[in-house]
Image (cartoon, rainbow, N blue to C red; front, side, top):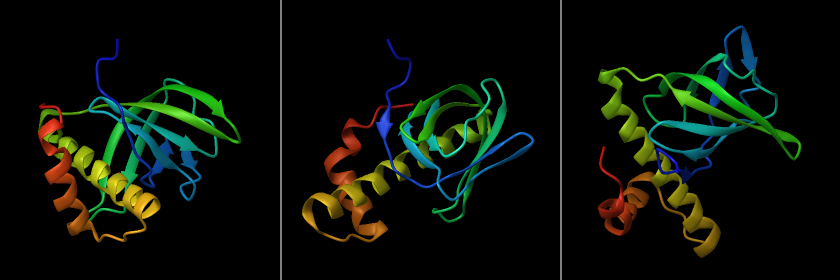
Length: 138
């Protein structure tokens, strides 16, 4: 049984492994949970290596450190599991980022499935009305 619920996402991220950059132009979040993420990357990441993830599509950009806990091939990419290293002062911020990822995923889903283009504020309002009550507590 999983410790944290995973949520799908498709947010672009920059993932930097200690000692080098992992092609930031092609990385995307695959699943998001309170404990970590999985990312699709163009390059493999060494298990146990320290990584830094930056989400630049939100303002201000968000940066968090973690450890690569697994890496496996996924078609022509690599799926990398990252466990967050979270201090108490980042817990609330991390929770907010998780919600932003949900909202951005919802926005993309509405565009793809319904053909409606929502700005971030419209997507947030709709997502909150439809899903906020089911969003797990911290």
